[in-house]
View 1 (spheres, rainbow, N blue to C red):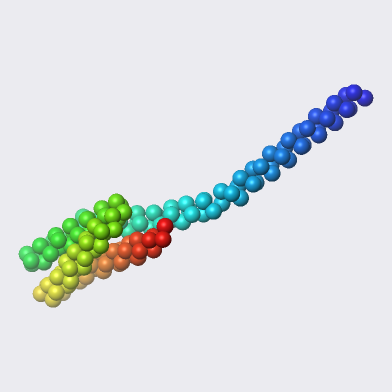
View 2 (view 1 turned 90 degrees about the horizontal axis):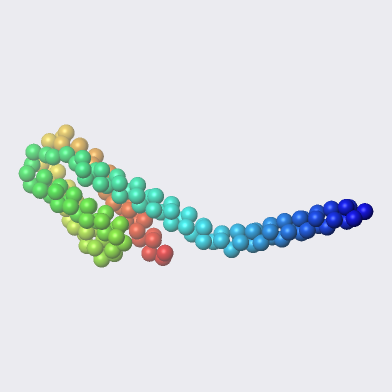
Length: 150
């Protein structure tokens, strides 16, 4: 008889403690959900930022050289502007980002003006790189502008 009472008390204590523990855990999960959602959003944006910046740095590294000396000089300015822009994005420096973006636009336009003096093969090669650079720069700039609220 005493055995069954002790056994019943042990079961009662076991089940009451386990139920109490479950309710505390679920309450903690509900409190932490908004923060985890926000961190998931920032993590996804960091992945996108990393993707665009790495693509830009790779394009800068493998950008071809051309016969036109003036074009190569402007390409060097473009490369420098892109590298500075990537550094400003990583440092989250809005002023430097805006300044280097304007430098990038200026260099990009100068290169486009000089492209008409290239032969068709060089022009096609240049356009292929310039389109990829412009796409990544615009996507990265849009991503940075969407982060203003965070």
